[in-house]
Image 1: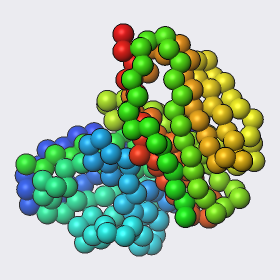
Image 2 (image 1 turned 45 degrees about the vertical axis):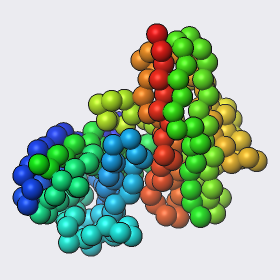
Image 3 (image 1 turned 180 degrees about the vertical axis):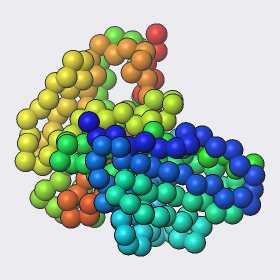
Image 4 (image 1 turned 90 degrees about the vertical axis):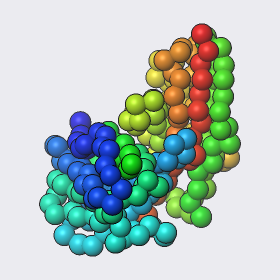
Amino acid sequence: GAVVSQHPSWVICKSGTSVKIECRSLDFQATTMFWYRQFPKQSLMLMATSNEGSKATYEQGVEKDKFLINHASLTLSTLTVTSAHPEDSSFYICSAPALDRGVNTFGSGTRLTVV
Amino acid sequence: AQKVTQAQTEISVVEKEDVTLDCVYETRDTTYYLFWYKQPPSGELVFLIRRNSFDEQNEISGRYSWNFQKSTSSFNFTITASQVVDSAVYFCALYNIGDDKIIFGKGTRLHILP
């Protein structure tokens, strides 16, 4: 079935540094990738939608200069958290629509801790 | 407005009891999909079911069953003979063809007590 591979699964970084999270669609082409953020005990909130070959679309209230999204190919989308701060600590999860296969496929998530 | 409401924030039941998780949705679209996902403590989202707006047949999969009622905009999920391993957060979600994105409810945290 459709698989999205997300790396890393967890990362700890120092405040002020940048962290890159990768999502790859392994057996299908993902022209679109959704990026969600989930704070502890909360729901998944859509941050942005990346589209291969064009600029990402950000949801209201999400800083596009802080959360850089690149969708360079049909199988790879990346989210870079720039100048991370402790309040950026969260669970980030990507998702690619593969509805022709019956399911929207999620990555396994990345738990980011900024210290 | 597109919205998913899971009114039950947290539920605790004793093992072997049946439990129903409620989901009510709002959408302008006539074509949409509804999902249920399970999120265990590891964080990974486990896909449980997808239902499209034209298919109101209820579905049963083992101990899981789903009741889709378009008239009340509800898509409820029942676990029969619950087990401790069912403990997790369960999310109901809505996908609109027009928006091309999934909207999640706030989730219901389910505790199955031994």
